[in-house]
Image 1 (cartoon, rainbow, N blue to C red):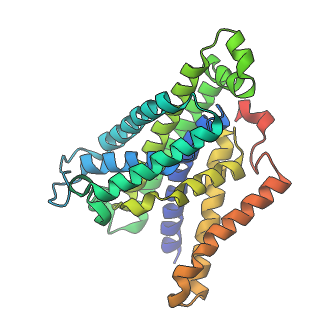
Image 2: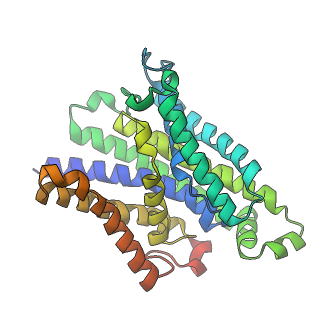
Image 3: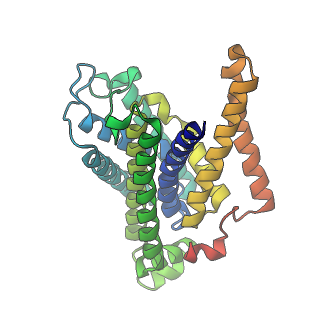
Length: 313
């Protein structure tokens, strides 16, 4: 029994920490720079599919089969998403916040449709399976398999957290905060606001792509339905509940919201009849929405971070 609990705990933490990487990317865009990206699911999907296509064995279902080692797939997924973010940002970051939100949402919808219809490359609605997973040889030993994956993802989150903390305290990070708080003053000091925003948008997008690649290799299967707007809602909720502007809040918010999501899912499975579970699953979204409303009312700065502490993370 204890081994089963530890196996589930490692699975839970690995999934939550993969979401934490997505939150760190969104925090860099929104919390640090004020870029309203509501197309998170699209950027995550790009990273996941690029990594999956490059690392899976050959299959007649899609044009993958390059068989690269999975760390190279993760790097390629992050790099491809950063490049995609750079292109999208170059076209959209001069727009007002509401237009930027509409544009990024349209980008996410377009990516989901491409994944669904470009079947020779993406597998279409059937998705891509047999994605290589770290420690695949230990798959028949769930505890070791789970702990190995957890160690990799936890180490990566720690490295990213420390790197982003250093960036936040650097002159580059201080310029981002200046642009967010008072762009006119930043321009008066000779700072190129458009260039800094583009850099932050591309780096944040790269982190989202990295998180998507990690999720793909952890589960071993992806499909277009994994990248619907629900994913964007989840990541935004994690960041707001954790504390926008705080890297620590982004990580802890991901853990908190994923725990709430898993708890409500478990309750539905345990207490709701099987024929009603699909309809009752909407209660998960409702529970997270209720939690978000309560946090906004009681602690507008988030549970684990306040805006005035953003510089310290």
